[in-house]
Image (cartoon, rainbow, N blue to C red; front, side, top):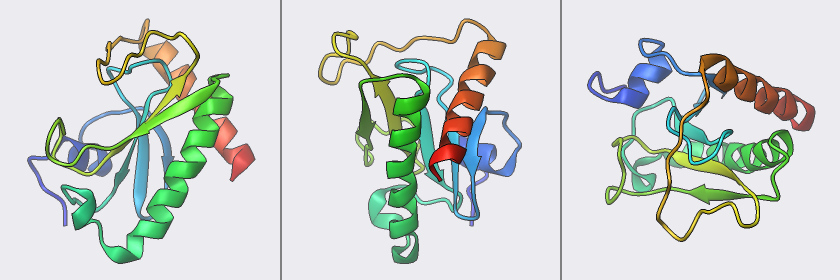
Length: 142
């Protein structure tokens, strides 16, 4: 069941546009429109659940396998030295729909602790190009 007032449910349903990197029966991966760095992805379950505690048990394994695969794909596609993988539950959760951030990282990239300097893509085409690079890498890995 989805929540009509939830931004991420709106993206899942296609009512709100996003650059989709991957989708399967249970999950959707899209680029954050205000990324920490280009390639910053959000992984959400298609089914509306607010927190990790609400994720149905039968989805846990496939959801986190996808998170792991996305970390590999983002790192490779963005030529990163690593990734930052994070999830908030209620506190600091900007959208009340479970989501995992996968952010490409490089040493001395300026990301300090939990002070996240948000940025923007140069233009919509740049965002789409990053999405394609990650999707292509994902297809090579998966």
